[in-house]
Amino acid sequence: MRNKFDHIELDKIDLAILRILQEDGRISNADLADRVGLSQSACLRRVKALEEDGIIIGHAAVVDQAAAGFPDNVFVQITVEKQTKEKLAEFEKKVKECPQIMECYLMSGDADYLLRVIVSDASDYERLHMDVLTALPGVSQIKSNFSLRTVTKSYVVPFRA
Image: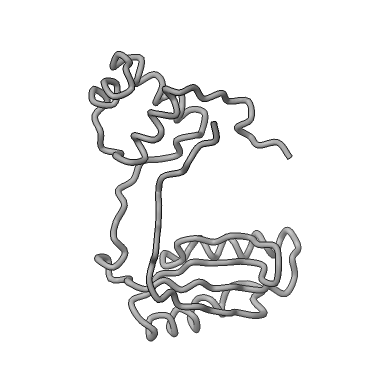
């Protein structure tokens, strides 16, 4: 199966730019250019090309979820009644409307979807479960697991050479 990025060739400078930007998204273009050995204008052109090619998809501040009032992660497996294109699209549209659902993946295996939701505590999850998750279109089964602690979490995507 071909990847939509197969036609894009990244050289050592592109890979360095991506690594540095993932580690420090606030770095100035001047400092970035200096670190990768390019002029500022050439560096900026490279960054713009990476954005236009869809490799860089955005810039964001990473917020500590506990500081925002949601210290707990719950991983939720959801099975839906029917996997028609329309039913899945309806489910996915509704999932995107809930700000506490941080991630949602269509899965193979026992469950159809795996969600990572953030909550303030068990009572908050109970409310989310009753008011949101059970109300999602086509849900037939929900299994939930509370995370005890986060061992590792990275925002730096490695690139294959």
